[in-house]
Image (cartoon, rainbow, N blue to C red; front, side):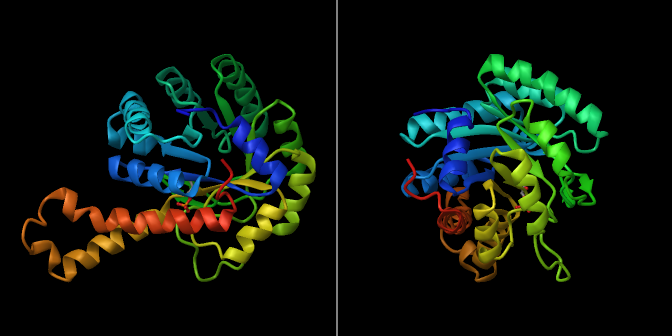
Length: 287
Ligand code: 13P
C-alpha cells in the first residue's frame, strides 16, 4: 500500500473503538522490526520520529527514504503513516516537504491563542499536501528529547476549538506522562478524558503509552482514545535483551561481534513488545 496519511486509519479506529499503534523509531533495526511485526499482525501503523530522532538518523530525507525503501523491499501491504512527533512549526514544514505523510504540531508550550493560530496556518499547508495533522491541548508530563512538560490537564473548551479547525487527531493531557511512570503515579484522569472526548468528537491521542496498565489502556480506548504513542517500552525491551546477551557472555562467542548478531536479541524483544501492544490496542486484523 505504501505510505498513506493517518486520516482513514484514525477515523476507522475512532468508529470501531480500537487504537492505532504509534511507535517511535530510532534506527533501521527499529523501523524494520516494527514494520514486519505490524504486517504480521495485519494492523495499521503510525511510524513516528521525534525531531531528535530525525537528527540522530541523519535528517528527514534519510528517514523518509529508509521507511519508503523498507515498505517496498519488505513488501509491506498494511497502511503505514510516517509521522513527525512533537514538531515545531518549522519542523512540520520540513517533514511535509520531505515526504512525511503526517505531522504533530506541538504548540502546547505556547499560549492557547498562538497554538490555535499556528495549527490553523499549518493545517492549510498540510491539507494541500494531503498530510494528516495532530495538535495538542494541555501538556503531557515528563521529558522527551529535552522537552519537559508538567502535565496540565486539557481544557475541554480548548479541545473543541482546536478540533473545529479540522485537524485529524488531538493529543490531550489527561494525567499521562512521557517516559517511565513514577511509583507515585496512580491513574489516567478518566473524568477529564470523558469531558474532552465529548467536546472533541474526533480520535484522541494518548501520549506516554509505555507502562500504563492494560485495563486503563482499554478503558481509555472505550472513552475515545484512538491512537497510542509508545517509545520508552521498546527502548527498554531492546536495551534489556542486548544487556542480557552481553552479560551472559554470548556476545563474545564466535562471530557475535557482527552487528547483525549483536543487535538481533534487541529486535526480537521489540517485536514481542509491538505484538503485545497491538493486541492490547485491539488493532490486530483491522486491515
Ligand atoms: P513513551 O516514551 O512514554 O512511550 O511516550 C511516547 C510518546 O508519547 C511519544 O510521543
